[in-house]
Amino acid sequence: MTEFSQAAFAISLKAGRSDSSRDFEPAVDFAETLVTSRQNISPKRLVEPAPRLDQLRSIFRAAGAAPDHGLLSPWRFVEVPTCKRVELAEVFVLSLLDRDPGATLDQIESAREKAYRAPFLALAIARLGKCEPPIPILERMVSVGAAIQNMLIVAHSMGYGSGLTSGQAMESPRMSHLFSLGEGEKAVCFVNIGTVSKSKAPRSRPDYSSYVSTL
Image (cartoon, rainbow, N blue to C red; front, side, top):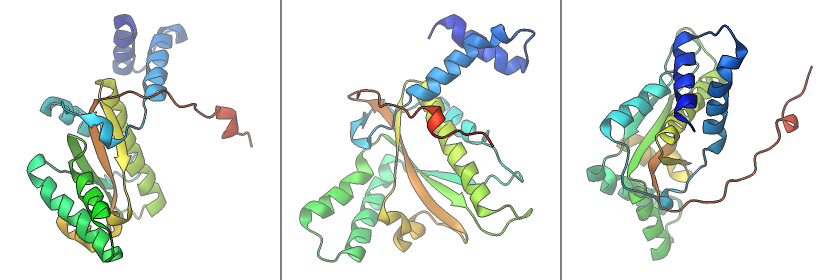
């Protein structure tokens, strides 16, 4: 993307309006390219370097710009630093053994290894307990998803790869205990961010006509 396009995009966002729709064209092109070029990257292919502290602040600030009916901020994120990965690995292993006491050594090692993949790892948590005003849970989950997507897009704009991971361990009481989940809070997924070690071919996107209709 050219410097002009990026500058036009930034200017249009600050201005909030334009005297000509043509002034927005570079910004629209930039935004569409940014969104449609992002790929979900397996944590196995995410390596150092991770985003810097100032970049992480920008990524987390982007989450706060998500649509939020009732201004509830129905999300929170818990970063898992390197020094805490061993505790997460233990939860993955014990959660597996809770579900399958006969798990093989390979399965146990695979569960443990999941905690050490991406250089940046954070758990996305949905806050779905009672609230005022009483916003439906479905609306709050939409907000959580939008907050996560904002983070992924900003990370992509910085040149990093990202991916979301979940699994049966998300429902484990051990996971709830490790991350101190409160009443009404649900572990949604892990956000993985890092430098892409090996790119993959762009996947085809569905044509919008397949999911858009007119009443």
